Image (cartoon, rainbow over all chains, first blue to last red; front, top):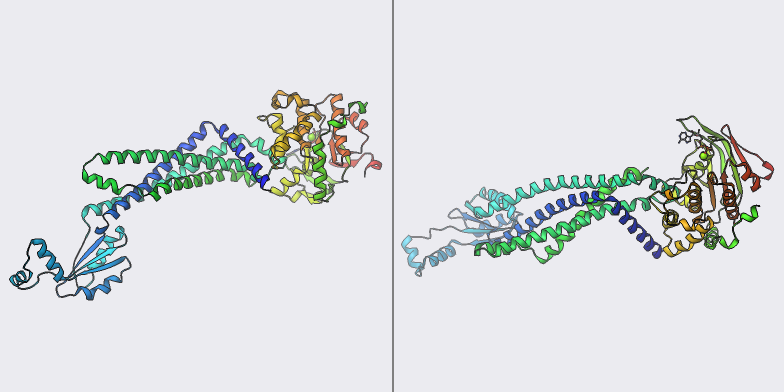
Length: 301
Length: 255
Ligand SMILES: Nc1ncnc2c1ncn2[C@@H]1O[C@H](COP(=O)(O)OP(=O)(O)OP(=O)(O)O)[C@@H](O)[C@H]1O
Ligand SMILES: [Mg+2]
């Protein structure tokens, strides 16, 4: 039984190669469409990984500071804040401690003296709220501003906020573009394979008459579609790795600030392994769907 | 005269015998053909076969004759499931062919060998590839295919044309290639639609002797032909289609 399978697999592989050879330039049309699709897909995936890498690097800033109205105690308000699902931890900075730190920062050593000078501690209690994801920060901040007892809400610096916004806009745009390109790639693969199926219609008819099963007849076409996807994935992966190296090379020659960025956008080992796998998976899926569309009309007869 | 044209007995491919024997153990069913009140009318041409009844036992040999356009090919198509009857049943080995679809039809067709009137060789494949294909699609290993291919080609006298494409062959050679394809899978039922249509008398008789030989091994053979000489030589039962109806010509000899 196993041997039979192996033999059949061998024949199917041969037939697939035969089909590929016959496809000629149309193969390249299909493969290059898939390559473009996967290259853009890869870039946006990689960018979203890199941006979240950057954000993680600035992770300490994924934090909202709440300054309470004077007289309101941080410890009292803390449980209320902890109830928000976006919140991961809440740290209380009592005004006494803040005062001490402030004075230390200012170089004052005589804390009691300074307090006496001012009459009383002018500061208020502060809550440092950590948030799970940078994207949640703005909306949470708005909600917290409405909590009674909170005087002022501050979070993140402008640059980071812009980065997050750009990233969101970018991922929405890339979803649209990738969606359209996926449809295009499927259409090109379907057309390519359907043309080959039609040109082999006579063969297929004879195959049916001498008792070849549908799977036997149509499998090579489906394998051909998947091959388009896999080849496209490998080529686009090559391009992606190339461009990434190039950019990193550019960044390392830059002043210090950009070197920090360069560290931030370096992919983790897991991501480096995952990227080609995702590309191959997505590519094969596109190829499979494209070739299924191509044969279904004939195969269902 | 026929004897002289019979192939030498060692020419007959041994491998054909074994799987045949093998299969008959696996499926004890007789490969009978049974048409019960079959009517088939083509709507476009209004041509039809009407109330055809036919019963063939395993191992029988039948000629089907009739004028051009009588419906001989149509009868064959009904048996191998390329056309479906409007009324009645076509039973092959006990299976109602008219309702078979998809893979079950494919599997039934593997038990049949069909010599098509128009050969249906694939132009882009060599003769070897055309014949080997039948075995490949059943997942038979390459060495086994090799083993069966050579004697089959020899049987139809095409060993020197093995690597030619159909367009490089004469009509008669193509016909013999299509016979080789029909028998290489050791069928239990062989349907030959005008298998000698393009052959001179000597070759026609040679083909007849091949088919007779297969019949002696227990294969049921149905041949359509116009060739009265062939029918005379063969001494086999004859059915005639006329006006859409099928009659046995020498009923006493039919089973
Ligand atoms: N697919 C079809 N659609 C409509 N009419 C058809 C079809 N196939 C065959 N016919 C008609 O059926 C009739 C019988 O055709 P068939 O091919 O069975 O004849 P035949 O006996 O094999 O003839 P020949 O000896 O010339 O091969 C013909 O008149 C033909 O026009
Ligand atoms: Mg005919």
